[in-house]
Image 1 (cartoon, rainbow, N blue to C red):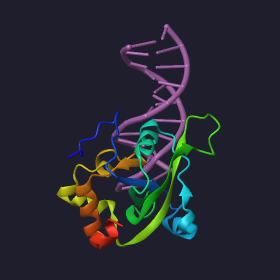
Image 2: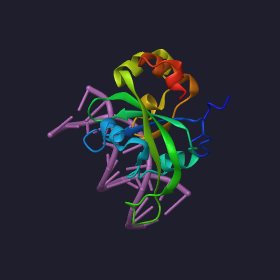
Image 3: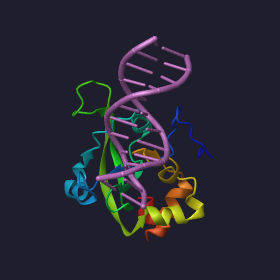
Image 4: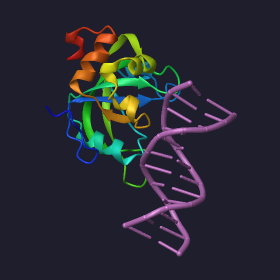
Length: 156
DNA sequence: GCCAACGTTGGC
DNA sequence: GCCAACGTTGGC
């Protein structure tokens, strides 16, 4: 079981969580991009960048609305590996491309995550400032269950 | 290479 | 809008 993650060697679990302020780029915006998806630009944190480098094609991500909403609202998937962030002039930063898979029928709020003892170790709770973070398979299943997603959609 | 100052994120 | 957490910068 590879659910113990070191910050320095972010081995891919295949499950992630991406934060976005809905004012800037919302779940609806990602849905509107369709199959083309969207490059996840603007990440300016080394740990978050390293997690993106560890992502593989087909890895699944929760889409979390920060600042407003404060909830997991959708599922998306990685459709392009880490590549230079086109918005970055320093050459240091990278992004992956993701596209929407399905909305979360009952958005899972941060409060609900915090209230669930099974999710006490989730980075959303323990390292809340990290905008790209790994999710364990158990956390993926639990948040999915809380959100009213069936197992098939969760593993799509 | 330490650490204080500063900037940013994001919940409240 | 405040402020806690924490990452980054830069002086020494």
